[in-house]
Every structure is written in C-alpha cells, then in structure tokens.
Image (cartoon, rainbow, N blue to C red; front, side, top):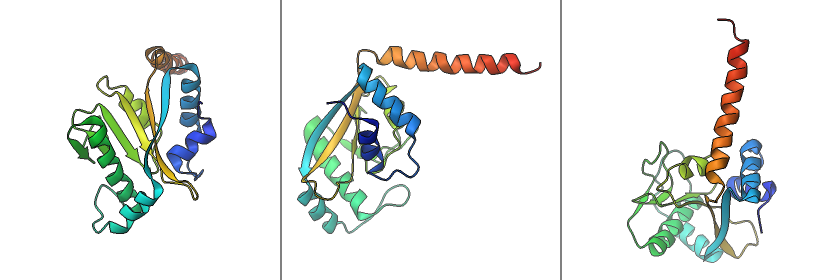
Length: 181
C-alpha cells in the first residue's frame, strides 16, 4: 500500500504538522504513486526495546540538540543496520553535504531518525551509490513496533528528476526573459 501525504507527514514529522514542507511531502507521495520512488516499511524492533534503550541512555551526543528518545532510535537503527548490511556503521558522519544519523561506511544504506526533513530522500538518492534511505520515526502511543520506512529509486526516478530540473529551468528562463538587460 502506498503512503498518503498524511502518512508521510507522520513518518517524517512524527505526527507534528508544524513546519511541514507539504510541497516536498506531496511530491514524494506522487513519486511513490507513479513508481518513481519505491517505498517499503520494515519492522525492526518492538517499542518495548525502544523504551528500554531510552532508559539506558547515559550520554547524549550528536550534532545539535539531542534527547534520549532520539539517541535510542539511533542506537536501534545502528544495531539493525549492522546486522542487515553486515558492514561497518557510521553515525552522524558527513555524507553528500549532510550528516545522516546512521549509515553504512560505503553509503549504500542511510537511516535518519525521528523528525527528518523529507528533502533528504532526494538528496541522498541522487547519489548513485545509495541504494535506499530510511526514516525511523518515533513510535506513536499504542504502537507495538518501530518501523523503518525506506525509499529507493524506482524505474521512473531518472525521468522524474529530469522533469524537475526542466521545470526549474523553465521558471528561470521565464524570469530571465522578463528581466531587463
């Protein structure tokens, strides 16, 4: 089942609508519907493990303000990805101009945790080495499992990106023609 824009808002913004980049969220929803992006939901841990991990957090580290819930998500994402990819995992390390929460050293798999700017999906997928980017959202009250929401390139991804560049180019050309020399 394809996620709706509302579902994607809940994934990237953990249910908080303030500051939602609806244009990006809607664009991702349409891209999934058209097959330009592929979406997959993977259960990675029970929420009880999330709460236990959160209770064990003693050191809070990372870029910008962090809290125990975010640290617990990163820890669970790191453990899951290490098992999934069978390779070295880096946390908060520079990659494609950003600092993803968790990633494989080679950058094939990237996980952002908690509230995340949805624009990072396209930023990372435009790197041909990235196979998928995922978001591990905070659990909603009553949820029994943590779900990783992954996004990968679909068969129409290159065409979708080319259309976006062309649309931007057309706006620029219209603006440029109206500007006096």
